[in-house]
Image 1 (cartoon, rainbow over the protein chains, first blue to last red):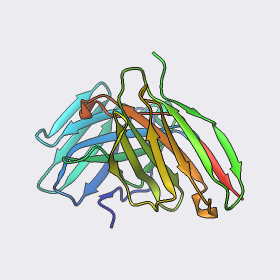
Image 2 (image 1 turned 30 degrees about the vertical axis):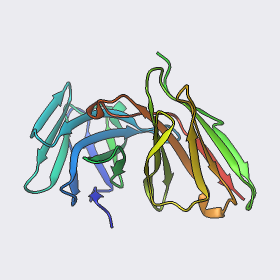
Image 3 (image 1 turned 120 degrees about the vertical axis):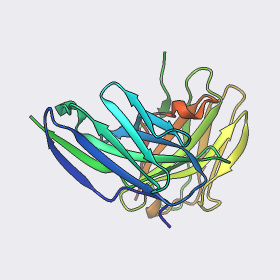
Length: 112
Length: 113
């Protein structure tokens, strides 16, 4: 039972354009959502988070949008840079626990 | 400040053996979590420790165990290794503010042959 899903396994975007990564979840008990970036053979790096009581959070080039009614969140990266090429994971925190439930990841390739 | 340190980085073990992995969290972080990453199952939660107590546990068999010491350093142990235990094992530490995210170490790559 996959509670957090990233339906697009890969995304290719031109440098300078916007990258939009999507994530869907099924469990209404999640109260925090996070995005991580991961390079091969390294641990995930925290990018940005959003509380379930908000619908938008922005940090520099990264903006996360949350649509609770649709149980959907998205990460916007603008402008995209070649160094953004990595695998991006969406993760959710359960209100009663301190464990991250991860989506399957989306591989982003930013072309110069 | 120093990040999360995991040792060793790489490990090769034989089926049936046991292994112990170590994690030193960021200074001041009292919560330490462990995750397993495999190509087939993705990133999965193993367990979380806070102040030497296991607070949360994932759906892994009893062969997977862990502990946390008074200095917040943590170890995880896998006994009777199986080929399917080959994975990248990641440790993450955090403060109490969950929204700040978790800081991950670089992981231990375990290969069971």
